Length: 404
Image (cartoon, rainbow, N blue to C red; front, side):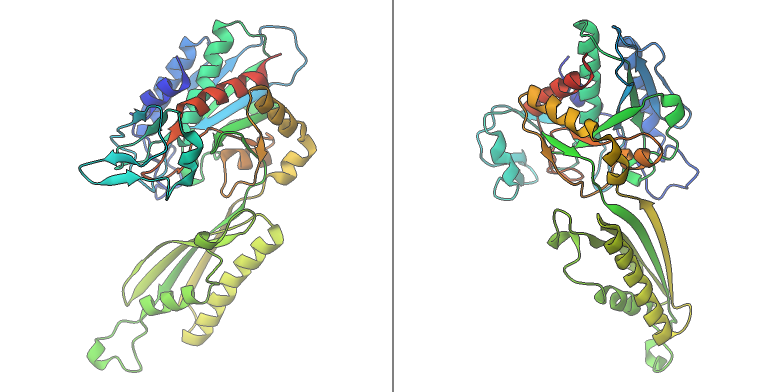
């Protein structure tokens, strides 16, 4: 079975995770376990006799070495959940064969069209076969494509009796909520090093990611009838707007790229009595990261001084850190990945992650774990797509990484 065929099966499972689930709920949505159970069964069918899903929805398995080797035990990791940013239910995927470089009508009835004028990466895949949605949901190649590529590589290792060392497989829930590594059993997993297969464009290798924090702000106001409000009303909505206006305009995702960090307003709600703001704060550079967090605190202090103590309640929480410092002593992982790409006819491209992966946190948990591409584009949205040929190439890359 080719990787794209597996992907088309996996996207039928609704596995959206829930960032608002209680902290003690794992996985955050029970529906993830439905796919998890199927993946564990599939691994057993591929010859991984110890494959299983634990009580939290993590799937583990081992493909023992089939030859003598002193190579370290290597792990391959992907995640099964999809982002709550767009619907992941009732995904209707189809293949655009031999793409001609023009507009792709995803949904004629709803007039949803994916155009290379908006998504210029499409032009890189003229003549290839693209898996797309019907424009009403995300696809889920983030990261079901990674699972499909890993499983297809395992199948070929066994079927073709390719000499290989011991390979550990780990499939996590809840990566999109930032909880994917929370209950990952690093010691039980038994790998010395690993790769997450959770990246984008074919050829990308990533070992630098954002430092990340979560900022939740509650504004406590005073509601008084507007007819008698003079000198009494303290409108929480207006204070929330004032808070946001004090952040740098161009330090948001719409104006940043590469190593540039940002503060991103993810949600705002409220009324005169109380309002809330939810931000994520990101920067590759730790000094700049700390400065961004300090700015939030400074604004909160200023507004509390202006409107009264307790008006602005700021809750700042670090969520993950740049894995570069953990990978730097093990740069052979990057060199091996680059060579595996070249041997598959893929030009490697080492780039920073403008986000995070399970691998970032796992690297700080003692499992050095850079990230590899899946081949997908436009994750977390209705215009997500992935070329079939990119998935085939990633299978070759994984085979090159584990073969002896």
